[in-house]
Image 1 (cartoon, rainbow, N blue to C red):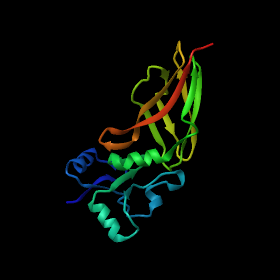
Image 2: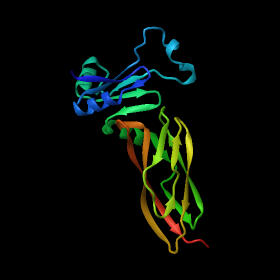
Image 3: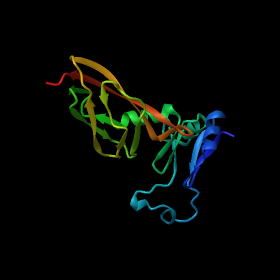
Image 4: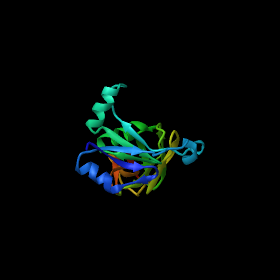
Length: 196
């Protein structure tokens, strides 16, 4: 056996996901549709049937077969993407754009950064650690094809200092194992300035 169905229809199987990892099986997804698609999925309302993403080197049956046997797959179901970190992390990182990566925080003032998500998948982020010098949102929803504001708030500081920081988040709808979201770091350079 070289692959296993991790999703069938609207059902996600964490045990099959675990087996895929342990036994080194390609992760597969199926819609199991036997009737017209619109009877099971409300595609005009943004509903999606599950898909298997195959990371092939070319658009040929030979390249697709090679990718399947090499386990270069991920599963898309609903608003979730399920697969190995080596595939999910680049998808996330190449989808996110900051309008700038340097910011100045004065005292306890707020500053806003724009984050654009150029993909067709909404990313749901949950903070995975505190930063001593500033406050960051507990959750961030990076809507597909949209730009959102990221609010940063400084903690009181007594001296000018510039730090390179990483905002650590878990992407709740990108699963690299059952109940294990992808961890990402958003790099930022922050200049902390005392309040006037």
